[in-house]
Amino acid sequence: MSKNNPHPRWDLTNVYPGLDSPEFKNAKKDFIKLVAGLEKFIADEDIDPSQKPSESDPIKLAEIIGGFIKRVNAAYNPAYTLRAYIRSFTSTDSYNNEAQKAMSEWQQLFVRLKQQRDVIFRGWVGKLGEMLPHILEHSETAKAHAFYLAESVEQSKYLMSPAEEELAGELSLSGIRAWENLQRIITTQINWNIEDEEGKTKKLPITAILNLRSHASETMRKRGYEAEMQAWKSVENQLAACLNGVKGSQSTLNNRRGREDCLHFSIDLARVDRATLEAMLHAMKNSFPMFRKYFKAKAKRLGKKSLPWWEVFAPLGKTDRTYSYTEAQEFVLDNFATFSQEMADFAKRSFEKNWIDVGPRDGKRAGAFCMYVPSVEESRIMMNYDGSLDGIFTLAHELGHAYHNDCRVGKTMLQRDTPMTLAETASVMCETIVTRAAIEESGSPEEELAILETSLIGDAQVVVDIYSRYLFEKEVFERRAKADLSADEFCAIMEWAQKETYGDGLDEDYLHKYMWTWKPHYYIPGLPFYNYPYAFGLLFSTGLYAIYQERGDAFIPEYKDLLASTGLGTAADLASRFNIDLRSPDFWESSLNVIGEKIDRYVAL
Image (cartoon, rainbow, N blue to C red; front, side, top):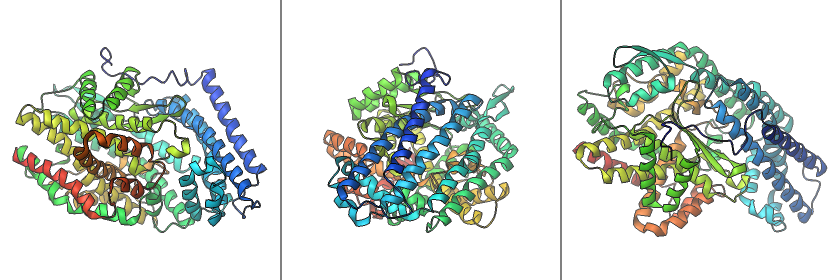
């Protein structure tokens, strides 16, 4: 573990030695050859989405489909390895022009690969219709990818013509992806002056200012909030242009592809149906009074009638404790072991091999994420650790994603393709394990209060704030279909969404109207509504944890099998393994009731 370096950086030297290394350059050449080879296979086998397959023999069709799947899997391995490696630079150093160029080159290649898989093959296989089940009988490769093929047939209904899809893919590099890149560059290169506790003015990267939201001192929390508002104000028009570009492009493509509305693509991508989403959202909305009770109790503890935004993340209870990164590692390992020694051993390996880029710095993006590196069957985690208990929970969360990746070792790239909803299952489960263990081990009411506070801050963000982000994005999509929106309009919509969800739990004079500027989720081209999947992950994992509490160790093998299978079925089908009905509000309400018990305990302390 990292005992000498307080904030180690991730190590990817076992992937490639450097961006200018022969190994990296040769990997790019190999990727180019695989993409070209797939294009040749498509031409040779007459895979044409504009007409019905010329071949009618199911044996020959099975051979073509199996051949395509093998070649796609082979191409996606270096594709995602290269992306992860390049992203290790672009996400932690937005000043690295060499990495920015490498990412641009990669994107152009990947557009070609996506065109082959998601347009040409998808359109062609969609025309096989009722023949597909018979075809699968003649190919083990095709049969092993039956879910992918069935999903491809369904999604083929929402394709433009091949020429239009090709043009859309090429234009995305200078359009929607360019807006995404601009948002990332702007938001990672902001440094702003702030007065420290000693009265000295310092210039800090915006990621460090964001971390002040959980500072022990209210003075510093408020200064951080004020500095943040000023910083985002200085770039609001540029970021409004970025968001207009992204949402405008998404709306146009949705319309041209025949999508029902702005949610349609997101729901399909999440592998849920509207009944499931509506049941979950209904339960979340009904829980707002419960969360407002928590907000008011917290405000009362802070001597306030309602919470200004800078107090939303304020630590309470035993606030004088900070955790070194070494202590954070030990905390996670000890508590993972209470669930599964195998999972604890996996986390230890990730620490020892420096898979994690830990601390904030100039040029590094905010937040945290985990990425899979196929060629070495490993993951890498980026975070902005600040020494807080919440930082430990974030570490556990991202390690959950990495463990999920590890459970899928041996699956092909197409079989690993997991929807956003189920992608949060393992991460939230790991966070839950650490949180619950921490509460149980608390040595005093003050310590229990501090842990409950940290846990409820996270729960409130995933239920209440996520719902506000859902409302914001839905409203933005509807208005953007008519015209561009100004920065003031984006701010007004964000404040409206926060009032609808937080209600009188927050001080309406001090909301966070600029939340839309720095949350990267709004700007990801292929992931509209990347908000409600977090709520799905929290509540689904809470329900699974309840089953674990009932069954103990007998639950673990089935849970691992679920994680290994998240790319092989819909959310409802996989949940049914545990007799969970996702379309029933009762399931979601039962998970929210678990959070309600924590709120009751918090209020009682």
